[in-house]
Image 1 (cartoon, rainbow, N blue to C red):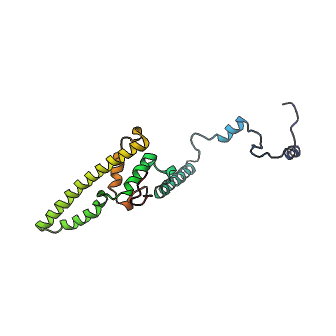
Image 2 (image 1 turned 90 degrees about the vertical axis):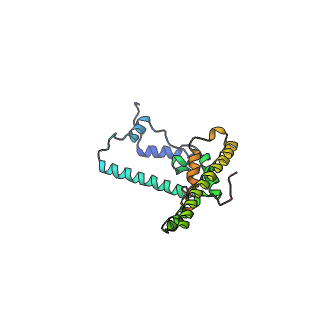
Image 3 (image 1 turned 45 degrees about the horizontal axis):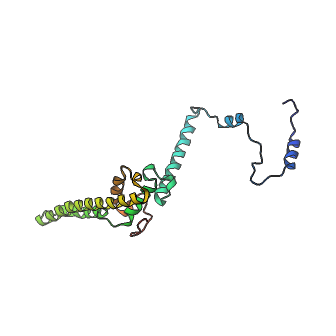
Amino acid sequence: MFGRSKTTNEKLAEQAALPAREGAKNRPTPKRREQEAARKRPLVETDRKAARTADRAKRREQVAKQRQAMLTGDETYLPARDKGQTKRFIRDYVDARWGIAEFMLPVMLIVLALSFVRQPWAMLIVFALVYGLILAAVVDTFLMWRRVRKKLTEKFGEAAVQRGDGFYAAMRAFQMRRTRMPRPVVARGEYPA
């Protein structure tokens, strides 16, 4: 407090005298006042244009990380609706199976083409395909969810199955495999253990 301050040469000589220890910090602890001053920022930025640009760049970077996670299945940057062990289990189970619901879009394109044919037999085929496929897909998806729920309960316990998980599984089952996001990481028939 009352002593003289050390010169730069004296500080360097003192640092050279104390060898660097492995696993140690090897520097003095900064004062709280210095740490707070380093963290201090204004509540409202003075240069709004620069702040908006920085915010946009940060948001763009976050979206890019999230998009990459959707392609690779990286759990850290996935959106909240896709995070967690149970969601991964549901995704892997749905992606491992062949389901009727995933073929609805291609069949509906055929139905659309047949609907332009103004023949009674074509209308009968359109009617049977549309309603039969919808009924079969709903029943198949319902039975799939019951199996997934049973396996989820066995693996993670009753508390792990949350409200909305069935809808998550159904929506994934109704998408064509190529268009599913996050992308499938398991092959067909490779069910989760």
